[in-house]
Length: 328
Length: 170
Image (tube, rainbow over all chains, first blue to last red; front, side, top):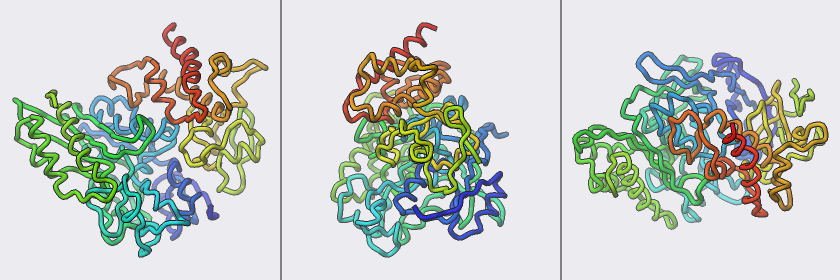
């Protein structure tokens, strides 16, 4: 591990001041960054511990929730209001990692965790445009069973590993940001970038910008929401495909729907096209399957991951059918 | 800068690169906590910090300034095995023993999570106030602790005896 200095920020403005160094990185639970530093994928010169930021989950005036960036994954998953009003979020969190890791990991850190592409991790043996811009990508011609089928580029086919973010994408979550020039909010769906020609740039964050909170707007329909994760073993594995969905059915028709996919792209993939295809239409398995078809129409599978296209379609249809109470 | 390990205050390492795991094993000579994968995949390094189970391999020691760490060395009291340790012996909850300290600490943290009502991936009703620790819940909640000898059935039996039946009796 490359040497670094460790400092602790007492609050957001203190963190921003300390982040003026070029090699500074904010540090949450450390569950991803410590590992990346040990592998020398990441080599920060300063770590700024931001677990002193807000750890509260509070109701907002419009009936939503404001979640401090330093809330742990466990604390968010077990929160009564989350379990009741946004069950998809609790479900997504407890589908991820292990209990030990969820106890350590923060909400802010979960958003910024990096891909589990094995070529990205393989500093000595593999080329990676994300780790070393311009170097090339060994995943594209390599073993790419776990890689992206949507929104990838000739530079990078990595996926975003988070389960929590898939639920947040479906829930219209807002990310509250702070920098020396002020504060702003971004929809979660616009925080992460597709790889394009610059896969090393993964988010829309400005240098030194800090995630301070995640806001969930009120969404009554989310009380009926679900998360399904398909993986190689029953527990403690990253998603091959995952689906987060909330569905409101009235008189047999889809009144409203939120749908997002994990394990398929460089970012949590909000399925806007499928949602548009579903709204106002019949709440039937045939309609759910057709909508899934629409969302996956542009899928570009690699050598080893063609199965993800069909898997994603089936999982979307199955989750929506469960929520609608119709049989597949 | 100091933390408490098994009740005793100890200074933190001056080099922030030292993981909590390496501090326990190398600096404090507490080799009970094991280094398995050293990348958060096996659970052998599980310890309790303020009662919560965490992976000491993915933790920098300096992160835990001011906190209280409990390792497997802190479980037995007055020469008596912790009830969970006794149950592991009784139920053959280990073969080579390498994963055992992590299993023990993890199970103790898990029992507290169940008591608090933290849901798991297999919890049926998220709105339930209490969660019963059945074998399916137990297996899911312990999935972050691998045993390469395959002693999982004994491990599950031992944990079940100490925590599930106690809960049911209350």
